[in-house]
Amino acid sequence: MTLTTNALVPSHGKYDTLVLEAALSCADLERAVRMARAELSEIEDVLMREFRLRPQVIGTALSRHFGVPYEPYRPERIKPALLLKHLKAQYVEDKQWLPLDEDKNGLLILATDPERVKASRIVNQVFPKSQIRYCVTTSLEFKHTVDQYFGTTYRSDGSSLRELLSGMDSQEGSEVEAKVSEAVETELVRLVNKVIMDAYRQGVSDIHIEPLPGDGRTAIRFRKDGAMMPYIDIAAAYRDALVSRVKIMCDLDTSERRKPQDGKIKFNKYGPLDIELRVATLPSTGGVEDIVMRILAASDAIPLERLELSPLNFTRLQRAIEKPYGLFFVCGPTGSGKTTSLHSLLAHLNKPDTKIWTAEDPVEITQKGLRQVQVNKKAGLDFATVMRAFLRADPDVIMVGEMRDRETVAIGIEASLTGHLVLATLHTNSAPESIVRLLDMGMDPFNFADALLGILAQRLARRLCTRCRMAYHPGDDEMQQILDEYCAELGNTLAFTQDRHAGRHAILARWAARYASSDGRFTLYRAQGCGECNKGYNGRLGLHELMIGSERIKELLQERARVTTLLAAALDEGMLTLKMDGIEKVLQGLTDLRTVRQVCMK
Image (tube, rainbow, N blue to C red):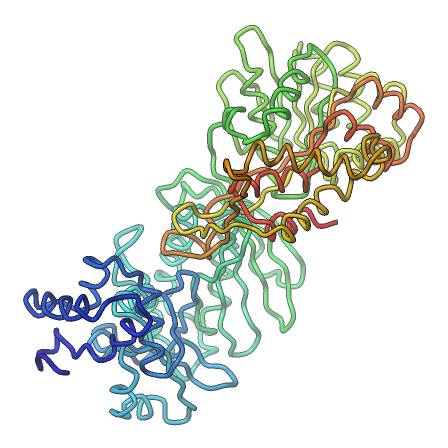
């Protein structure tokens, strides 16, 4: 039924599927059409505003009507610069079609009305040699995708990615190997600055520049919340100039392309942000170079209360670090938040009557009251040298960014036994493994046992987006599976060796008391995805494993006990492993089990 021929008020036949799927009543759809006609607006705008229909619901209905897949807006999608080279933003907005990607299955075209675009045969004229496939999306999501590709929303320094890339694309011609013009070099400078500023403002931790050999494009991807996400791609002609620009910013040798190099960018020399980036270049297959830039944003320490430790871990940790002397470790792989946790501990200890020295590489977090030293290996200022100097500088607390060799650990133990509190990081997987690693370095088990206050192992897991997470009630089978995973490491503990069934029942009863509703049902959540998050996740949270240097642990340490024995003893004293702490946070609705399994995999 066609109500009007006005382009702003289309026939609502393609929305009839909403009625068939019971997303909307027939009367409501008719009302939406009348409102759209009266307002001279899109029917979809009315459906979303007045009837609270999500774009995914409308998109699924359109998919059924046109018989092609529904393609939602994806903020992580890479811009296909080569496909868009001859298309203008105004034309795309007028004609309502856009090339998304081309692979072995053909060219994928996004459209709000695939039948109309297909009938016009204009796509076949623009891309005559391609096998065309279509997908459909909502008008709102199409606008978002056009903005994402052409940069119609202005960002950062007031210029858009469309301006930057179009200025570069206009220079691309038959002579791909020709020297990049001075104008394009200027655009590259602005582009690199924009990439860094956009990454910082999006909360990205790492920027990856990944060129392909030959005529392949150069992809730029971001790591956010621990997961990689595409950002944009650059034509092959500007690959070398892009790499050279980054090298110039961090004073690396632009002529050296066969060996890895590393350096730092102080971005306040090039842009408005006072941040530092750690840069690594690596030669890769095909004579090209990859670049990885880690953003070292200066920030304040997070209060200890906001580390999201469990109540038991928070109490035990606070009690351990408030002792006047001893050795406390934070361990985990690179990027697990060790430095953040250490600075939270230092902020808790940072009082006017306390002298605190830190040795770090690099200094990422600064605090008033701390005396911080930047390690400089080229100048002979390594961790061991700085530690020896600290012992002559009247410290109360010493923090060492990393204990990676026998000499540094030995000095740390010596300092802790002579009346200083020493905090340090280790690159180990779990708290019990850290003890064995340190003993394998040749540490005296008796001195080490005397010095040890505790070890905090941690990981960062992706946090579920609270806007779009989907609640559900797990069945008995799923709860038993979760309980099996939780109890997997409790087999050697005293409670489980005496009566495994009673131990499992006690844990389930404790969960029910803490997390279940009054009728005994648990509520878990699944990731879904919305415009405000990254595929259902937004931010990260810490998972913790805290082993305290109790008398029993120290006795086992002196006896050089195995990891399994140390683990069982710590669990008997109330320690939660990383996975156990993760499952507790799954039951709280903060994350999901799949994410916990990923970060706690052995």
